[in-house]
Length: 417
Image (cartoon, rainbow, N blue to C red; front, side, top):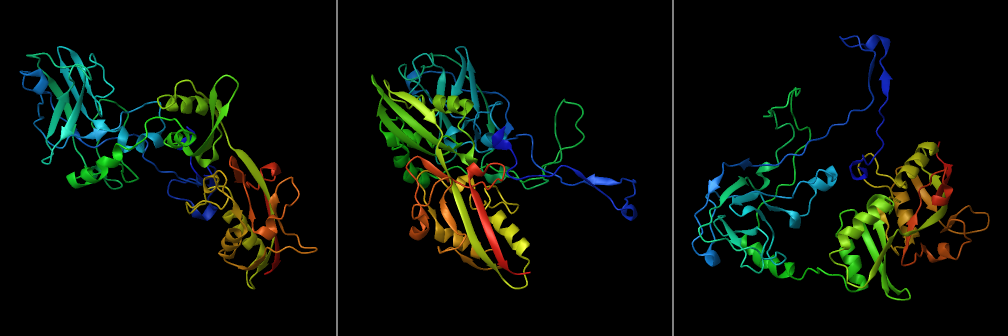
């Protein structure tokens, strides 16, 4: 999936060994690059044997406790989701790893019973100060009520906190009936485990949790709930009367500059359906990119090769993730709707590159400086010191020679070696 793609270019070709540098095996070629990663999802904890709970005596007051403390919480596993989404699931998506079985069927955990009808076999797990877990059932209106004498068997996992965030190469064994596995290791440290909130943290955060907007009415509401989607960096909503009804036009800035294609539009539309106001249509589209046309004169310090300094400048102002994991100046995630491009920021970033003595960003007769929109005449942006963007516009400068319409950047070098 696109979310799981490497954020940098990795050469996969092999390189030739010198004839006098062969290893003991006689190999004459070696890999140019090696990528290490954890490729199988795993969770921390232990699934306990089934536990029989006390029978139901008073259905209205039935609130059994599990024998073991420290019940594990985890987000439901979606085999169709990307690895990035699986390991970065929001905390609100986590549920206790508990399953109940009774004569009524299988009972599953939910965050609350407000959306459960009187037939749904669901329950809520609640913990107290001693980390003991109690199970709460419905009242017959919100969630099904257990029957008198009904017996529950609970299967659950224990294991919480940061103890599961083991270090790199901590795994050494795998228990499985699958054949063909020669070994197991984790070249990267594990992550995702967090400690349970303390009672004091609950007191502080609970009032704010109930202020979370769960419906979309205004333009700001639609933009805010769209930004809850993990692939959306920012969204802007516009309400328009389209002749017979109101329509919300949602313009989305995807992370990493990915396109708002038909598949993503369908995914986001389904994500927003629970928030959408009845009687309103919803249209989703991508941003209006504004390509830039930039050129600056750069003076190189003595003792530096001008070609090397130029290469460093072009890398610093690229639109990709750099080898040191930082973003290039024009990376898609550095700009969003309506964000101006400031000349001062470009000058500051250029001056931070080793070998740059000064950068001439002033206008004048015969000077090659350009600071404007691509394909348009200048409108005083250089004198103003910024290129202004509209409400639905995002700046772009890929500096790809094969696609100059996506922005171009030129450095004219002087001095140096």
